[in-house]
Length: 504
Image (tube, rainbow, N blue to C red; front, top):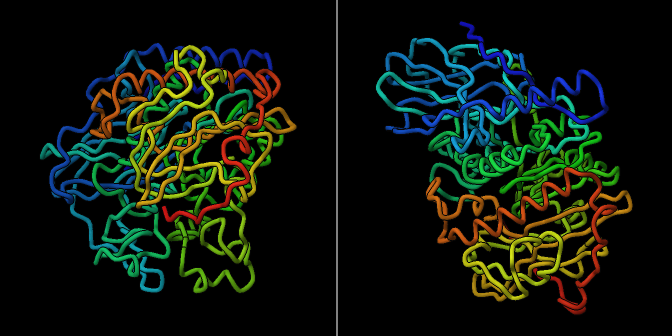
């Protein structure tokens, strides 16, 4: 069964070179943002776990491409609605397409692969959807069962290229790593223990809970803000950067969002190369680029449908024999240690923590217009995982620590740091040092129930700081347009002894 989108809006624009095509694309992008939103996009009732759930056979598609949707439901029928996330006058989403009635059925039990304790749904395809005239962006496919229950299926309509645009890199590999559908994730098995965890997880299964928890908590607020600012935007995923690195070429900036832990070495290499070619980078979470993964095919040889990460069992990884650089453990660990701090400027240290965010350098351009003074703090903004500048590990220089937040984690006193550095290409790089940065963009609104006690004052501070960041990074190479950072690592930490690695 095939279903086709019928909206007439165009694709997101680009700022590569003045041309009729670029001008038309930019006008289409602006027109999309002025369209009325759809306030009914939120789920009202998830119902029992098997009420309705689904997954797609691709994490992303280009506009006009086709994606397969696989649905299991206890209801006799369902419909699919495609909502594009954005500002839309505060509605935060727009209905782009809706299917007709689709016959529903409960699909069979999942397949279990003993060797890696991998769960695959392996369901029959329910329908094909063509993203005809769907603008590039982040989408939620909402499944509406005829019994009134609902679930989401996330889908990115990706950009072919991001030249002159701000590129949002969504993190489906991390979504999948934590996904417990079928009783297994990269963290636990059906008995809840680490020892019985999966060594590889499949995209060919639904996401647990609402179907899009990680996107909603750690990414949606950033999409909404970036769209509200009217910046030229492009969309991709970490999986797509691994497969199609050309999307990074000429991007004004690339954003890693709130929880982006699992990277392939190839993705890291391509993002580092983009930085060295002049693309600004922002790491708006913590624990970023911490796990080294491998992407393997799924059923029928479909590329990049399996996330492999043996973690502490890396000696059992068959790749270890001939490709030590691809051993799937933490980037900082043997047999091929390469700490993430050489890219991010900060190093993941641990969890859980809950601490105030403390401003160190209120005069930094990132804090312009926030009204903060040195020492001002924002309760609960540091958590639940955090990063810090760690002398003794590879760290770019000069690097400026602009927030230095005391905390206690598992009885150990430490700090979380927000940091900024530049490189010879002129690219600027910012790391927030806390996983709650994107969540704070909706603090005090009770969206998703994930405020952690953060309030409207914190939301205003983080929003203005992020607006400063996005506008500066969209304008060009921040290292050329903004003051060069004065290194203060020694002043803050002295010679410092490096601490032990975290376990996010």
